[in-house]
Image 1 (tube, helix red, strand yellow):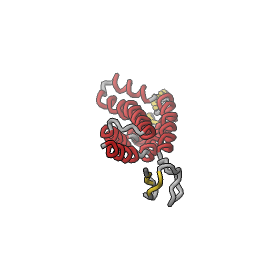
Image 2 (spheres, one colour):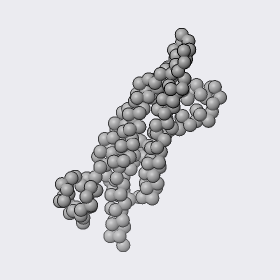
Image 3 (spheres, one colour):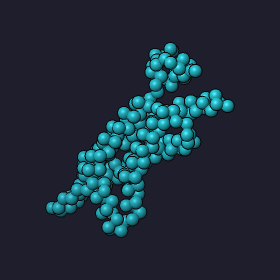
Length: 193
């Protein structure tokens, strides 16, 4: 049985750890994807615990976390915006972490069940990566637009943690290689027939 190098494309024996042509690891980038995903998850916690935004109005200063902002928007009747912020800041990042860990686990265990679903899940996390910076974008736009004598909006540490979390999840998705699973499952199904 043979293994293809993800870096140079050379065919190697299945029992070797390094490519005979380029010398790089044949284990793929999934360990790197796992490291990025764990790092992103670590930064996701303070991104939701620390304030993302500080509003100074006259002599009153208020800070809001992501969840606080969602509740404030909901209470003010801005339901569509509250739902969008909830989806982009809470639900989709949690789903992305679950999917990334599931795909990494499937590749490591060479689980061929639901291969088409796994490919669709991968496409989902790849597509949602473009929208991951929505919160940080909103904070930056608000900071730039609302800056007068009486009102100012200041990004806080939660926005930085959220930005770092997004960067780590994007790197995790880029590093994730599910083609190895597709190749293995294709060979596995052909060998069974």
